Length: 308
Image: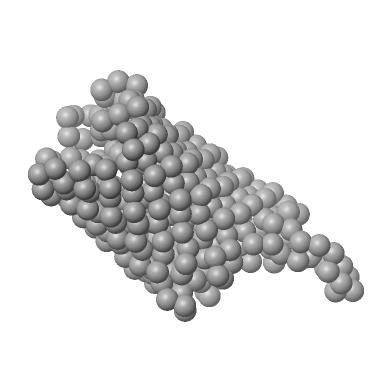
């Protein structure tokens, strides 16, 4: 007999966050896994960051403050490579429609490790690879010179090989900028349950609040981020801290730390990163250092972006 959909779903939930006691009533947890090098390298603390190609995934409202009329980025990474070898692909873009309005879009694909199926005699029949993805569009509007609001709508698809499911989710966000201080607030993955047959699962709703302060050091700069997250379904807190030293707007050195209740959400990890700016091209790399006992250890992301 082939592996059941319920078993596949439980396996995916466990591998998505790579924790031992993830709550089974929460589905499509890949939505909250950081998917680009900039975010990973700063410990996931980017809800208060300035605008970049991947702002759609953290805080759409900041996109309207972008200094560029167009930016787009592509990222490839491995999440928990030693434990599950999950692959994550992200694409994000920002288009400035006017001085007060911007359009954003994002695509995320999460590929899980192969699962072996067996027949009624327990003989392996082959391997299958469940996949999940989301695609969405967002809009940001500047209410004042310092305050903006944003909203995303996302279509989420989950392919468990023997049964598919889909859902629609919304993200709401706000940004307030005071000189060199950025403040961000967002509520993500708010929407209907995702249903597999007779089983319904909550979306991984999360509220984030944080900020970024930038110290101008002549031709160089140093910015630091602090963020706190509340996971609605798990009723738990997590957070992150990150920093970036930018040398003459050419080279960026980054580091961050994400802390969490490892039995309920994404495990804690330390990250480092490097960024290079070549005129309108951005190249970024992030690497996760968690120790051999933590699932995210040795994870990495490579991102490339363009700004015009």
